Image (cartoon, rainbow, N blue to C red; front, side, top):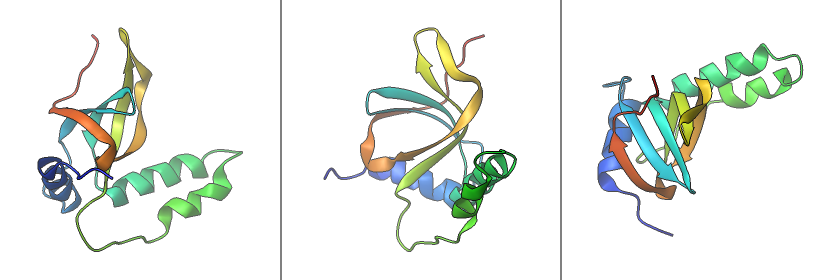
Length: 117
């Protein structure tokens, strides 16, 4: 098990503590490049729950994301919203998605997001 990057944990903590919800970040994890804005976990969970609730086939999973899971200690995951997986000259999906990434699995990162305009 690798030790999470302390600076990245500090950034995640600031987002979680509500001091910032506008932090743009790009990470490399598991061979994928993900770029977007970070959100506090509670906000991210609520948005995923809303999307699932609106789905005719996935609504039964919505409650899983609204369950309280407050944990003590430093954040262990980054919660991206309006995010894309970068592949070649495109970002998938074009409109942005919701991604959860383990901080331990981040191999490289940079502040800011990449976009193709």
